[in-house]
Length: 266
Image (cartoon, rainbow, N blue to C red):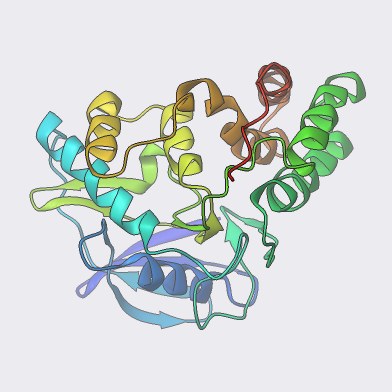
């Protein structure tokens, strides 16, 4: 597990026995997400195998105004784009991680094929192996992934530059605005970050969404699609955090099966 210690330069994070490239991937993701006008990311002050030092962030209580600004900035980060769906940060050829788990890289031209194959099914298999989900529950997930992989929900949007693990614990509120930490950065769909904020709860979420839409309006029906983009984090959690997430994953998949196919762009 991660161990944290005081460091006069900033926030010192260590992990005994960290896999090769673990903190290096974090640093690459933070740098890649730090685009002009986008959400600020924690600055890396020092980096070596098994050890990273990040700038200290003095946290303050969130406000509606800060949340709205965060949403608008997040749209700018997403709009910076990526080389392909599943692509790692530019100039990074090492492994990717989400939390302590490996995150497969990919270079897919279509979102659906990427998302089903590289973001849901690998973790579903692990969840089945460890008993986080039953074979019966997994049937709905496989059915949902069949629709996703077939392109039923592809909307023609280009790959977005996503944080990839945007739950509220990775959103730090400072006097100068939000600072992001611990990314699983890759090329994905912009609604995935928003869906993860909704899944685990984030202060003033409605203001975040309003700020986002003021800068980059979401495609109609995005609220109904939220379970689609929550399949990945739910599968990751079902693989290591118990059967409650397996049930939630099944329910999200059942919601996906009820979604109409996206109208194909001309």
